[in-house]
Amino acid sequence: MINNPLMQSFEAMKRESDKALCHLFAGRIKANFLMKILRRIQELVGANIQKYFDFRLTAEKIASGMDDVQTIDYEVCRYIVGTHRSNLVFLTEAERVAKEKDDAYCEQLANDVITNIKLRYHAGSFFRKMPIMCGESFICFPLPYDLFAISIRINEILSRQNSKSNPLYPLFVQISNKGLAALSMLEDNFLDNAYPICRGAMELYSKMLLLLNEPTVVQKYFKFVEYEVRQSCCEQTYPEEFNTLFDNRIKKSEYIKAEYLHFGWLDNVADYHKIVRQKPYSINGIITYLRSRYEEADAPFFDHFEQLFKMCHGYTHGSINNSKYPLLHYFEISIMLYYVLSHTYKIVCECYNETLNIDDVDIVAKLERDFEQISNQYNRRNTESFEAYYKLNPRI
Image 1 (cartoon, rainbow, N blue to C red):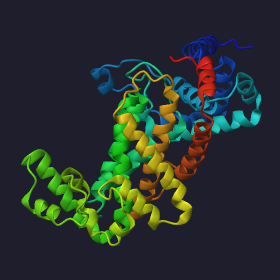
Image 2 (image 1 turned 180 degrees about the vertical axis):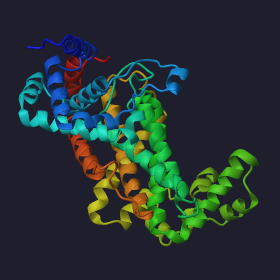
Image 3 (image 1 turned 30 degrees about the vertical axis):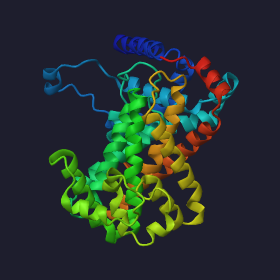
Image 4 (image 1 turned 60 degrees about the vertical axis):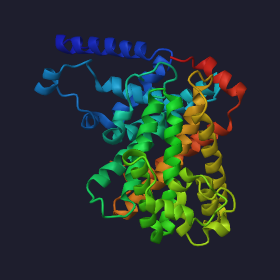
């Protein structure tokens, strides 16, 4: 029995805090389950968890004003709710109950949350309290959270490098930044704005793959980038040097000058036009070429990549502001960015001799595991599964 008045006061405050946490997340997770996982995480990590959070009250914070008072328990609960909800996609109420009673699942969830917390330094800014736009909330769904972390790490690595240290440095920067932009659109529920950015990231990624295999063409590629800059924002006319190249293009039947401006450098790729017969000056042409150059086992990847790129094109020229099933677009955007960012991350780390792990987390293994989960969920999509999901998970 506790007789110490100070201890009694502390215990009373803790009970009130727990009640408040359960109220804050009501409708998203069962209160007793939330507290169960929170306690398990506290047991596993103990006081060490404080090193992942910086809630110190400093003079600078006081001077700049504080919008709210944050606590570690509140932040950990957000991770629990987001991670758990991502595991429940398309599961029935009975399956949810079974998971929450499964000790092995509870232990795995607690460890997954701890891993996500370890990535806070790199991914924390993606994990916003409230999306700018109301609607579906994807707080701490693992795959986009992972992707945000590796994008920040790519920029961190590149910031320490000279721009001339690798000829593809500008492409690495562009791909990472587009990834961050698309992920921010996803988190803030601007789904229709995420698709065009994803499309741009996929284009850059395709070019990067080709240039990695054709290093002698890199200078030609950036020469065409220079032509594009001069045409679009400086002279508003095509440079004379470019006009000469266009007049002497290999594929004379392709007469759209704007397409040649973006892809004319492909004339310098050996055997390119022997392999690509239709629409050579396009991303589809590059994908066709890459498919022929990689192992046969990679063909399904390029098929799916091309399908997603075409889908992106359709969404870019359409409107999904009032999409009936926002979860569908969370799937697609995350999968597109996984293909682009996960491979780019490995390439950047290899180029600059950097470790793949982030904050003692095997991020590659985590990415693969989280991608497998989202792929399985995406493959189960249909009208009935979406309707059931939104019945159990009304939009907040």
